[in-house]
Each structure stands twice: as C-alpha cells, then as structure tokens.
Amino acid sequence: MNNRPLRVLVDARMLLGRFSGVSRYVTRLIDELVRQGGIEVVALCGAGAKNPWIDREDVETIISSFSRADRVASRRVEWDGLYLRQIIKDSGVDLFHATWNTGIPAFSPVPGILTIHDLIPWREPNGHFSTSWQRRCYRYAQRASARRARQIITVSNHVSEHVIEELGVSPAKVVTIYNGVDPIGGDASSPASIAYRYVLYVGGHEPRKNLAGLFDAMQAYWNQHDERLLLHLTGTRESLDDAAERAFSRLTHRNHVVFLGSVDDCELSHQYASAAATITLSLDEGFGLPVLEAMAHGCPVVAADRAALPEVVGPAGILVDPVSQEGIVAGIRRAVTPSEFRSNLVERGLARARRFSWHRTAEIIRATYETAPSAPVISEVTQSVAVSGV
Image 1 (tube, helix red, strand yellow):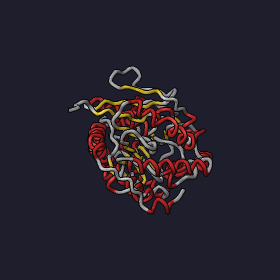
Image 2 (cartoon, rainbow, N blue to C red):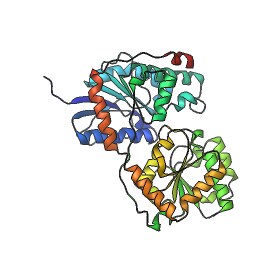
Image 3 (cartoon, rainbow, N blue to C red):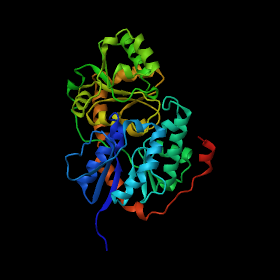
C-alpha cells in the first residue's frame, strides 16, 4: 500500500504580474498547505517572476518558460496547449490545481482542480480584451477548463451561481471556498485609527472598480462636510481608466488625493490600520479581499451593495448603492465620524474577519485535493454554454 503524501502542482504563474488578490490567494494557500503538512506542494512559476519560495526547502518550484507576454489570452491558450500537459507529467504529481480561472490542459495526465475567482472577463469583455479574438480565446479556455476540471472551486456564492448558469457546469462540480485573511486586530476605542484623516482605496483601476464614482463622491463630501479629509489610493494616476481620469480632473482638491503606487505588505498594513475607513465601490467583485483585510485591521468599511461584497462584509460594514452619490457620501460620513456607531462598526468588523482565515481555506482545499482523484468525472456541459456562445 502506498502511503506517501499526495503530491500537488499549484499554478503560481500569475506572480509575473501586479500582486493582486489572485496572487495573495496562491501565496497564502501554498504557505498554509506547507504549514499544515500532509501534502507535497510543487509551485509552477513563470520566467522572471518573483518567487517567494526560492530559498525555502519545503516548497519545490518549477520555473517554466511562461513569460509576461504569455499572459495575453491567445498566447496563454497556445502556451498551455504546447507545454502544460508535459510539465504536469514530468513533475510526477498526483493532482494539478489551476488557480487562475483557466489552465487545465486537454488530456491532463492527472485530475485537475480549477479555481474561478470571477467571471467578469466572460460577462463584461469590454476593457479586458483588445480584440474579439482575445475574447474568444479566453472564453474557449475558461469553458474548456471548466469542462475538464474534476472539481471547480469558487471564492463566493456569487461566483458559483454565475459559473453554474453561464458556463453551464453541473452544480455537483462546484464548491464555494471563501478566501481568508491573516488575523491582525485593532483597538476600537483608540482615536489613532482616524488621526490621519484619510479614507483608503485598495485595488485595481479598471472601470468596474468605479473610481470615477469614488472621486465624484469625495468631491461631494468635501463640498458638504469636510474638505480636509484625504483620499489614499493604491496604484498611480497613469493607470486610471478614462472615466476615472475625467472625474479626477474635475476635483477641486486634487492635492488631497494621494496615489500610493505599489505598496508592500508592511505599508499596506499601515495604511489599513491608520485609515478612517476603507472604501470599495466596485460594480462587480468575485470576492473583495481588501474589505476583509480592512476589517481585520480594525478599519471600518464602506462597500458597494453588489456582487460578492455583501456576502463578505455581512452586517459588519456600511453597504451603499455604488451609483448613488448621496448614499456614498452618507456612508463615508458615518464611517469616519467618531461615535459609538463607529466603534461598534470596528468591533463587528474584527469579529467578522475572524470568521475567515487562510488556515481554514487551505484546510478545506486540502480536503478537496484528497477526494478529487477518486471523485466521479462530471464533464457534462448543459445547453446554456452553447447558447452563451463565444
């Protein structure tokens, strides 16, 4: 009888790009799987990517030829078709975990598990793909990977519903496993958290993030309440989408907006802990990791009442209509004003964040790994996929 640990290849190629929520998912998943033991973890990295496990003996890494240029949908489909199956075979693993929405090759030599973080590029292709060919390649890859996967992991029920409806996969194939957060803590009674007098936005700058709405709401807040309140944003002005750039140009206090650029974990933690509130007004989100991280730091959250954000925030934050300037301004006002309500908001946020942990996320995913090889293959795709087309 073979009692050796299950050997799993985890796709970490997305570390080539901007450190995003998907990057956080993969790095924390691998770290926790190694810490918990019982599984041999192999990380598949790209060429030139920052490898957080390079000096560690407990994580085997495979450095592939996958490059930044291969992130484009058509080139990724081509690269996966040419190389991925052989890499999986040569690695001697029992299971492959495609962590990046697509990436399970045809005729994979081992069972594959697919994590889908969202269906936003599928549902809203404008702004994600430069040509219709790129869109078709992405849709082909996501549909094919969903069909080939032994199990599909989604990060919220919101995403699960869309995967079942729009990709047409069997509900028996789909399981929701929430993202986690590292426990940080905060002091709801301390005024230090609002001493810096700024609100914080953490995330990308694509149109669905609704930064135009955030800038317009800040202008209204300055006009109606307090023009001293600052806005800190990750990223740079150069990465704003067109609507956000126009809204930014209209601001009367542009010097009150601080672009933080790329921030490391230490600086991000400081920004959360020192902010009066964190604001997320996305029109669509598969999960919304910044709101969870903010709550773990004792930072009040104002979030859109759409997509997966209410699922994550629950009763611990202020939910607003992201297209209602009046509602956003009122939400910011309640979050940043010292009061018993604000203190309770911090306490509820800390309690809410404790319900999510990377330890628990990895624990459930590990259980999924252990059952996947013996699980029945469910490859049927319902007619809804054919209807949705490419």
